[in-house]
Length: 300
Length: 275
Image (cartoon, rainbow over all chains, first blue to last red; front, side, top):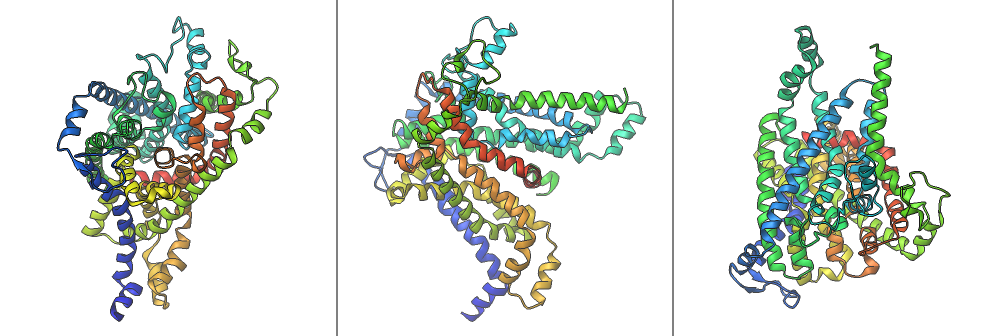
């Protein structure tokens, strides 16, 4: 007993206690729910059976129901389109901005920091702002597009099945771009200036310098930013809730929103859990690749 | 082109880019100050006429803003406390050692950081309701959000702890401090900036959280401001000035905090996210 106390006070026991407190917490509120999620995906869980910890087992019934759902294919396509389009534009615009603010001029760093104002806002508020910006009759975006002659009649972004997903993608690009920009700016700042000077002496122009120095030197950063982009995009929920609620007719429903709808709108927690299990496997797969690759390149 | 002209040109471009990017925020404030009819003017009025400050006074009472903001603060404070108290120790240990077990723990924590709340809320809701935690919905929400914020906090704080030389802590031990004494008297004070930035980021996340709150808190009187906003968003809404006034009241404190701490947030964020 005494030795235990001494260890807790002065030895390895102290560290063990600290780390196990956090791990125990995460086990209770993340680890166990992960396992429980798999269990309830094989059970029938509705409002009436909520009170008990274990429910009637139904085998693969929930999985079959989800895969045969008429919405399933649409949701899969939407999820892929939403993720790829968001990540692509967040990344390319973020990279362009990072390159621009990497040039030395007075106030460059300060200006760059301003963009994070978008990133610190609650997702739900961002969604509500874009809901208003994209309004069909009185939205300022429609007004600008009409005045520029880019469209001939207003687009009903939120209620047109062809545009509802694009509406959420636009908001998500705005929301996620600054984070991409900041991370890429850090990578750019780490490239030694002499490399560029040497290349300039050798007669390389700006485009050549970008492709022979910037891109190769940024490989690790770019990989990390893209992986983080996918991970964050697969977490996006608030924008859907605030702009389209997944509608109309499921035209802007993505997997993470569908899972929540099945659980909390249709109160079919078993089917909600099915999608949750599948998507969690996808997210964990992407992040495992991300963690492994960053460790190899930059030692974690 | 000489340096001065180049600088002015770049500065002008930066100004335009920032102006375009921040337009949605400007539009929120301008709309909130318009009259019920001028929000629907065609073409839109880009400058407000006479500012309609009474909209703010009106929604303050009608939309129960004090109650919503209180609940948001309650949840954000709870999340920050739970996350910081439980997470700081772990971050310290993870920064102090390098071995296989630490690597495994780090890997587990990184993996838990990426779990989307909208997917985790299904098992958490079912489990919480069967063990009775949903009788205390705000506490349940705090516990659920903290499991999401803690990995992020640990990663950020670990970076802060790693900048503190081991020798300082060893000197404190030689002077007769216990491990806990050295941690509280030497290490934590030295790392306080990093911990503070991480805690502020967590607080902001808790303040704006939506998924867990809307799923776990059924009682309207206990719901935070994020849900208060969605109550406005019925189909065919017309009161956009009131909604924008609500949004402005909700995010202005966050934006003010961000402007004050911009430099710290940017550096804290970048040190944790990529290393």
